[in-house]
Image (tube, rainbow, N blue to C red; front, side, top):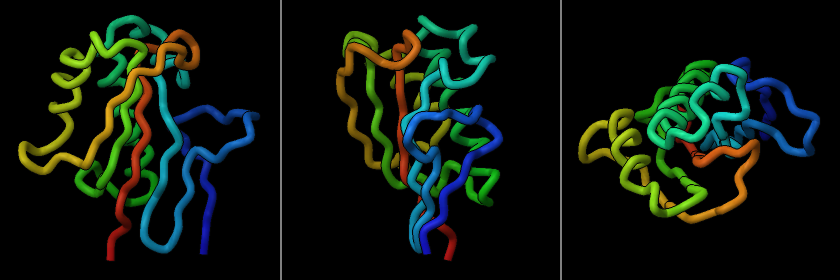
Length: 128
């Protein structure tokens, strides 16, 4: 069964996508940027702080469905500039156990929503 969720951690959008789609095996999360939530706007422009704000929001969304960051098996990180890779990477490391990182792709996407410098999407394995 496929379920669609609007998490409390992210304000509702009228855009034609679901923030979280859960199938029988995984929870699939749409891309999250700091501009998606009011407190995130304060960190726009600081790649490390944007990364932390986004991963905190993802952590909250995971908790809403009974999961945590250890269940994340894949993430995709979009940076407005690959020059910001090291700053993003340093903040990203803070959220995952050393040696148990999700599979990850990082790409340059110069025009992210709301003037954001970082966007992260992920996939988490359901328990069981």
